[in-house]
Length: 631
Image (tube, rainbow, N blue to C red; front, top):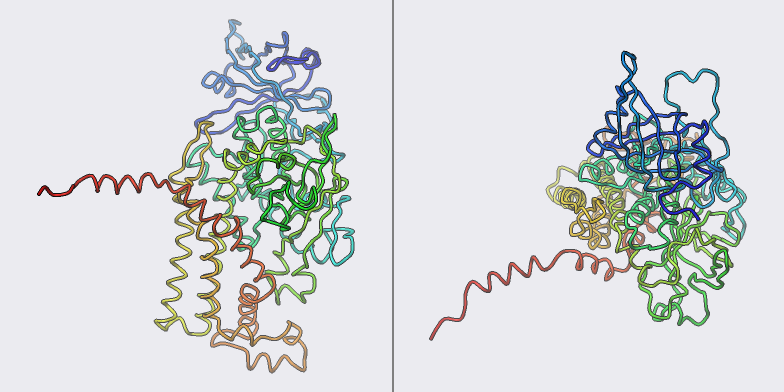
């Protein structure tokens, strides 16, 4: 077995021949990566690699300042990364116009850059004169995992849609879904997510970054190292949040934040950390949509998992094999699971002694044999048009009961195994929970702005915004929205750099909003209901009455506002109804109320993360400043 940090014999052999190697050096001040490619990298042995470059190049200059180097090369169907420290020496070659620098690198780490058995399907080939331009091996590299091929790049919307056409098992209305991309219950949200991927892939939107491995990735996978990184991440995620008006709670950026948090804390996962790292790297470099199921089904909440009337009602390990485990049971809520690529499964609710069979976490593809989804009724399928239900038709992300019918999970896909403490610590002992909720607060900020924008526009159209009592309610809405945005930015500005160098949003401010979310959203909806009044009930049943010759004249005459034609007024009030009165709107009120759990759970987060020692200390100092008067 090859020692850690030593090139295996097959890699040494590859690097003693002519192969394309990508070289990356990271400027940690600017967080930019300088990259180039060579075919003249030579492995002296498993510990040392040597090569030569033009001493005048920017790459060599960067390497002198920060002598950490990584080499990326293809070996035995996998992309390998070798990292270590490099030493630069210049050679005396007289009057040669290009003075070479001799570079020797001592290997400290060797790993694969593809996830769970992924294989490189095409090796870069020399084509005629190589010239002097660096060769980007990532432009043509493809990886395969579980029989699926994908390119290492930020995905387009079409690539995302194509990735969903597999053998996943989804039931809705008593029937199995043949193609999730075209089924009326899911087509709307698929198109919405495709639009988000197109947005991220457009360089003009600035939504990608260069990873520490030198790859280009979607910023949803970014591991922030500073306050500036958090601001950069927020600006990128806000583009998606605003595109969905804050009404898509389980977009790809949510669980991506959890994965970034998991991989940032190796000490939590112990010997299984490499599995976590490979999963994160694969998802990041292939821009995969990962969602999760981390809540057990509501059967008997008074009992622990192992005390239920039947075994494996929540998902648990029913069999251990030499090559992996078999899991059986179910989890909820499976939001967006029907239209994602991979599923992370674990349990965020507290487990008790005796629950070890249920104390696991693992990743799997959505078409894994034995994995079944039972979707709730669709809020989009029966709607006549986007004009009539603009939110329901585009942003119904679907929720599902996820059933594991003896699903096989290879060991390399397992992150936590029969460990109650690690199951809890993966969420709260890493940056995962704060990173995921940071994304949630970015989304909620956009949603609050959208809601109060609808309220303001309705009052303007009705002419009621001039009344003091209406302005009072609009002012209350403005205060609520500003609280959410202010706490988001405060958590970012006053971030904490943890022992692993990760910038965590300040939990005091982050969980303050989490603790208010159940009442805050309900308050906004209540005020919006008051401001729209009966106007949302006086709209035609569908757009058809607005275009049919026998009905359109009445609609245009009697449903209108000063300065606003019938079509504009009806469009606004149908939007308002989709927020406050439709099934979609009702689901969102329930969703926000229980976003992080029951009210006592979320307020517990605020209680534990405020830092009451500071507040109690203020009281103690004041109490200590005076005493009982002497007699």
